[in-house]
Amino acid sequence: MPLLLPILRLLRLPLVWTALADVLAGAAVALSGPADFSWSRLWPLLILSPALYLFGMALNDLLDADDDRQAGRDRPIARGELSRLNAVSVAAFLLGLACIAAAFLPAAARDMAQATLAFIILYNTLAKRATLTAVPFMAACRAANILIGFAAAFGSWNFRLSPHAHLCLALLLAVLPAFFLTSRLLRAARRAAACQPPQ
Image (cartoon, rainbow, N blue to C red; front, side):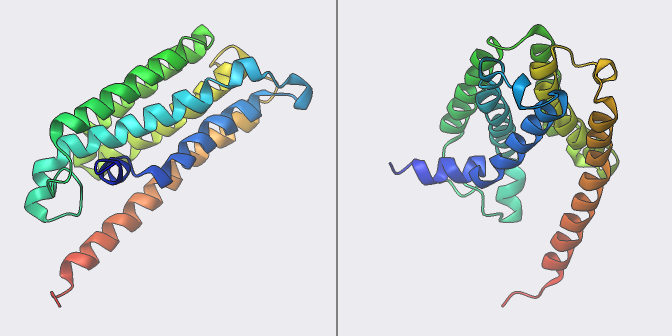
């Protein structure tokens, strides 16, 4: 039990609902209506998408632990509340869970899950260091997650084949400006906090 709170803080668990919203939005766009709903195709999404998202959160803290410690950030690995070994174990468990869930999805959805994982790893290892690369890669993570849901419901990630292609395209195009604005706001807030004199 002493590890539970640091693990929850490592994973930033309250944010996981955004990943579920993305993947289910992709599935909803692919479906023509409630009659097309198939629980057998969609239940793995409820495991796969959160597992990939939370894996990304754990990887983020693992790779940033030294920077977080130097900057005095309130993160569990940096503060010594959670060991790197425990964090790696959590990340490995989540990745395994994602792989198991992906095995129950159509091939097209598995392809998009692999793409999402690649974007998560590239974002955390390389792209996040600069806004110019961080925003597109974060948006790519979200867009690929949307397409996992779309491919699971439609059977193909190629949304142009769908009668609802315009809706899927609108959903995908909304991701990049949303993340650009969010990124700019977060960076501005961090700069403002750094300029505040200590109390």
